[in-house]
Image 1 (tube, rainbow, N blue to C red):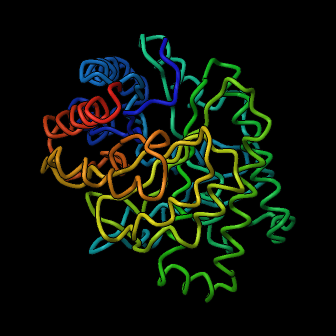
Image 2 (cartoon, one colour):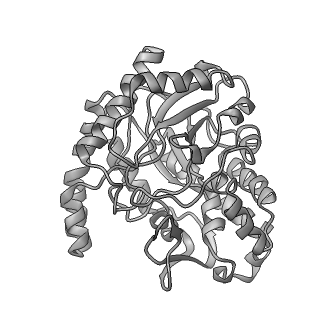
Image 3 (cartoon, rainbow, N blue to C red):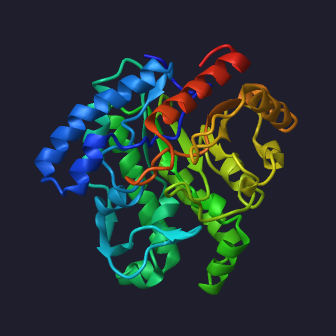
Length: 364
């Protein structure tokens, strides 16, 4: 079985197959939906293998959201449907709100452990699962929805989140996971002037948050065995091809690169909203790798190979090419609604990822 890091990779989520989407829309009972997912996910795995990827996911096909499903399955957390959802550019996500109701913890029977083992048993390449990173619990939970008195102290809450994720990392390793990805997108959000202003209005210093988020992330992964690779994804929102934030990585680059032991960084770079490539200069020399997200998942238009090569030439001014790889800037369906492209366009994007890797490095 191939082992990470790879030159060609992807963030994780894929457009939901029609049968799964229709079953969800019809509110199929859980057993019937599970049977349909079990039938469709092997096809998603095969598609990824067929395009030449050495790493595959289950497409997050069993989830409604990239983050809320996982969080709602933790001890001490519930999802409440009320009011309005988070504002994206020109739209809002469905009105789901995380609430902390008890002592946080990672249950031994967390359903997404089984999601991973289902994937692992059905691929001959490297299986990867992505889960929301530790910062997600803090960033996405309104302070008024932290209903445990002990967690009113931010440091106590950060400690509890970090401990929960240490349990998660150990649990995934125990079921055979050797490549775990944490979607810690809020490092990128905190480079957005509007997001920073909003945090200041909540009496939260955004730079202090970046530092504490890096501490949580590192606490979660620092005790992992040497043969477990940790990836980290950052973007600025992805819902039906829209976004929620803009701004470069300047504020967060030192923290993510030098204050965490993350191995692989998936960094959105498909538009000017992500800022310049200059923050890549802070990546320490060595084995850490940046998967440059020059290919967008928000439209079906296929990027040109020559353009991608030029972008890598620019990136190489700040970081050694041996510490680079390529992946799309985000998932294709961060929620079950999916982005505005077809399954065929999705496949061609993944083919381009592999072709670009082979063209530049000679291997996927």
